Structure formats: structure tokens, C-alpha cells
Image (cartoon, rainbow over all chains, first blue to last red; front, side, top):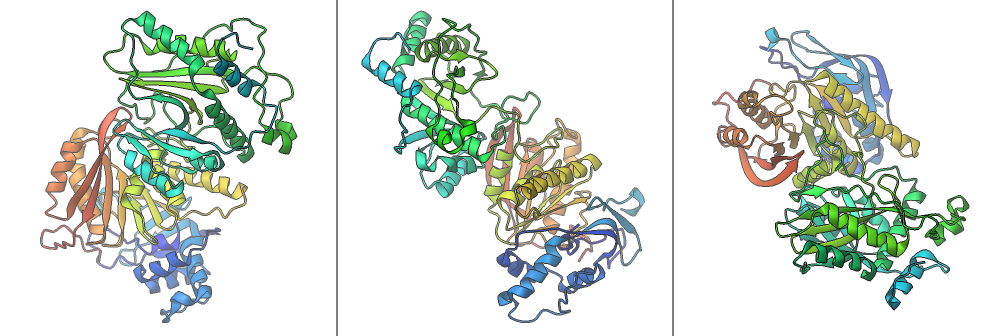
Length: 123
Length: 469
């Protein structure tokens, strides 16, 4: 699971109102090599929940000193964009789980695949 | 070599069988390409974009034609919307067939020696050396032959003819058409001994007024081709595949540039309904992925669509999801397979794609966070059931509307259950607007690819949205 995906995932357990962001508990993390596209990163940043990304990257030890808040003019800062690129696309949780912040329900991650299926009673 | 009369004949034969000098003059030929029926325009667009020429479309017949010069030939292998490629030897728009079968077949036989083979054969040869240089993996995009695949069967009645004849005159020899380039640059590729060229003829025939069958045409035409070139007929291990395509009054003779193979280029782990990559590509082109678009396939099966997207439209990000264990595992396997292939070639292997296991009717995704939804919806024939679709489709569409960005979002949905789909869309209270439909053929089933626009409508009152922010 990449952190870009994590940024969009939320808990949908019945009755939960604050299911975002999911807490990451990782037992295996991998870093890949993905082609850097500055335009992609630039345009993706406004679509993100920035604090959730930074927290997640921090937890996995790959924060690379990204700031807690976005600085203006980041579009031209290639260094910064590369760090964001790495956090979004290159860091992957292979084994572990995601935890709903409200209900505590855990969704396992195995082979990089989070299993978000709910049981019948949770829907 | 050949015992036929006529000056043309001798000239052509000698060009083919005794290349004494390097012939590096650039020539222009016509290439024919088979594409998924319904996506001819998409394919023509891709040709314009990647090769810079206008293609002629054979509407609803799954075929396009375009000119190319030999110095640009390698570009045809970059086309992602074509299943098979062939070089046109000759094309007759209004071929006048004779009344009787005997006369018609006789004429086809005579045709073999009169056709302008030379340029087409040069292109075939050039293509072969291109493939060797690239270390080209066997198999193009074609999936035509596999019986249980999704390969579309074009509306013409196709009959692949087993070309079986014992060679007339067993000790006839033809010098191989050795490629001068490969001789010079790669001595291992040189073919020093004379070796028989092996060939087969495939005839596709469609139309009511023909007095002959495709079997007969292939047999007689093939026999004449063999006589003319002194090649050896071989059904399975052929070097050259000659195509004889007859559609009413249109006759096209071609030489195949891609191998008939079972290969779906990206997929190594197949599922029961894996879509062929050319169809995936056509669907992706339809939704025009932009830089940083978040693209979801919430019923991804083996991941064919998002994987094709991650490779070909790689400035977007793909999330592939399915509720089925095997499906998500196959998807991950397919992604890994491609990544490994890329790593082996020395390029950065990571693809912009992720896989999640989820229920499409209850997506664990934030509201309005997705730009494009693209998926192959269960037809209800091989997967699921028609009855299930009546419940599934509306739930799906509702949930997809929730996660899709209002105003700018789009969906490209493939389904054969057109009635159910139309009803489900109309029940959505204006959340989706139909933009266009492409009619396609998937594994013999008539299906529709629907391009929908997500309207700006945001309707909390109708309880369409859950409290997922």
C-alpha cells in the first residue's frame, strides 16, 4: 500500500463518523524506484490531505523532514517535490494493518494489499 | 527457381530469393491493423499521434489501414490499440469474382504470380530483423486463437485454414531471404546455408455471394503461392503468414507482421474474464487520463485495465480493487511481473498503481476524491448473474458517484447487460450523464463501453451519501 492510496482510504464501519485517517501499523515496509514526474506531484499536492501524508510518512520513518504545513511556492522547489514523490509513491507498506481511529477495528495488510472488507455485522 | 512465364515473375522471384546487394532504399507501404471492433477511431487517433499519418477506417470491421515508410516501421510496434499488423500486398475494392467456383479458384491461383510481392516481402524481412534486434518476446497483442479467451471474433465468418500440402518437388531449394543488416551487425543471426522458407495461408471470407469457401480459396491460392516461391507449407512453424481477406467484393492480400499468439501483453496471471490489453487501452483513451488523475477500477479482476493505464498513461495514479481474494492476488502478481520485467531491462520498475481488497458497493474511499472510474462490469454471463446485476448495478453506480469528483469526474464502464445498466443510470437522479457509447465485441458477446460524466449534483437528501466526509 502506497501512502497516496492511504491518503484516500477511510474506515467505513457502520456508525463511524471519524474514520479518517486510518492509523498505520507496519511490520514490513519497502521502498521502490518510481519515475519522478514533477508535474504529477505538483498537481497532486492540492488534492491531498497534507497532514495525513506527513504523519503517515513520519510513522514509517520516511518523513524526510517534510514540513507539517505546506510552504508557498513549492511548485518550483524540485528538492521538495522529490521528497513528496518518494513519500507518495515509493514507500510501500507490505505487511501490517490499518486501524480505524474511532472504532479501533483493524484492517490487515498483506502482500501490500489492504483488506477493507467488512463483516456482515459491521455494514 | 520458378517455372512461370512472364518478365514480372522472374524479376520478383530474383528479388526475393537472391538478395545480392543491400537494398536500403526507403519504400512506403500500406499497413493493415486489426483492432477491437468499435475502437477503430481510437486506433486511428493513436496512429495519428504516434506515427503522424491519417488512417483509413474500415468501420465496424475492426480494421484500419495506414501508410508507413520503412524507416519508420519500428513505430508500429508501439501501437497499443492494435491486435495484429500486416503489410498489404495488394488490395482490390471491387474484385469481380467469376460465376463458377472452378473459374474463381483458377483465377485466384493465377493471381498469386501477378501480385506485387516485392515491397511487402522487404517489409516482412525488415520487420523480422527489427524483432530480433529488440529481443522481441514472442507474441504481439493478438489473442484471436484462444478458444476461451475474451478475444473478439470479428463479424466476418473466420475460417483459419490448415495449410497442408506436401511440397511439390521435395528437393526444391530456395535461398533464404537473408537480411543484409543482420548479416553485417550480428553474425550469429546470419543464415549461411540455404534454407527453405516456410509459410502458411490464412483466409478470412465473409459475404453471401461467393461460390467458394475460405478453405478452398486458401488451398488453391496457397498452392499457387507455393509453386511461385518454392516455399514449404507448414501450418505451425511458418516464417511467413500470407493473409487472404475477402469481404464481399473487397479482397486484401497481406503478409502478417505479428504472430498469432495467445499472449496478452501485460497479463501473465489470467483470470476467467481477463480483458485483452487492446480493449483496455481503447477504454483508457476514451477517458483521456490527465496528469495526476486518480483512476479507480473498483472491480478490477486480474487488473488488466489499471495495469495498462499505469504503463501507457503513467502520469495518473491507479487504484485497482476487487472483493475477491484470487482477483487481488492475481492483480498484484501481474503488476510484479511487469515491474520485474522493467527492472531486468534496467529501468526504474515501480508503477503508479496500488491494489486494495474492497466491496464496490461500500468503498472505503473518501467522498469526491477520484477523477475517473474505469471498469469492466460483471456481464452476468461468466461472472455473477443477471439477477444479481439488478441490485448490483444501482448500488455500484451510487457508490461510484459518491467517490467521483462532481463536475469534473468521469466513468468509463464496459458491460454487456445494457438493459440493466440503462435502467440503473436513469435511477441515479441526475448524478451521471451519458456522453457516448462505443459498441464492442467481447468474447463473442455484444457489449457497450459507456462514457459517463459525473454531474455537479450533490444530493444529500436522497440519502445517497454516507457520512464519510
